[in-house]
Image (cartoon, rainbow, N blue to C red; front, side, top):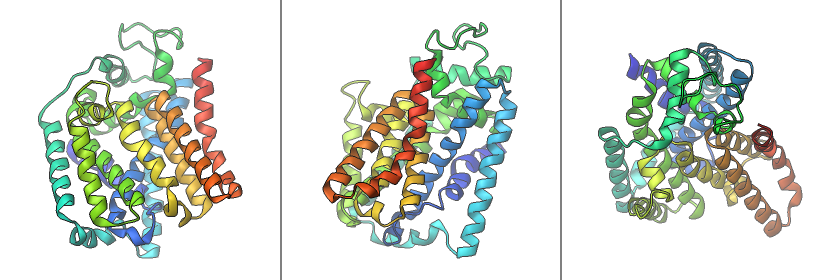
Length: 346
């Protein structure tokens, strides 16, 4: 039952939640990947304001989990209704995806799946877990949100001390705690064993979408790009601070997910013809969700994602001389700006 509930959170809900954001129809071969990636982002984006409200209003973890589950269930039902009405679904291009896969693509897929299996079979322990996973464990055991210091067990008197502000303004721990409470899997094995395989697939799926955007859907070039990305990450162990090390070894941490999911999806959302193929409202909604999800994962990651998005929009405005088409995207930066203000305020 625990695994069924976990699969509901990591597979079923994301595929439903991401279905309103399919990308370009011409790229249906990668549509399932894009839908799944956007579904994770919607889950994270929904959790961010709820977690902040829960911390500020002293909700119990049960209340937060119930509200979050109700919201994503409602959104999933709405997405399913839209799919049935349109007679459309994200699995539509799977056959085309398999048929067009080249040898570098199959090689990359085998390597990614093998590494996903490796992350399940082995465990990496990191010092940062004492705060982040510790906060999730404390929330589960005490049914509270940021009421007790995970390092000492003492009641928290000031959220601005002992780096508590990082956990408040980027409350990823609340997502782990909610999923733990929902599935019955303890936060430590959840983050270290059960979720890393899905994060590995998620990260390299997002990079595959970047390849699609870079090479305008040319499959062989995209497949070669995917293989090279994996190879670069696999040989990134020259330091524990490289992006590749985070992606392949510490995938459950917010920094890794900011690099492996948020940044690539910002690029996919704003890149070239993919952005032009969608309406401005849809593009602005996507960008807002991505940046909001980034704020949940890490304060610095959320800020860097916003800077990256601003740089891409500036380039598009200068190159295309279409400043008016960029302006509707500006409201998407409201959440990162508010998160930065809250971080500085605390």
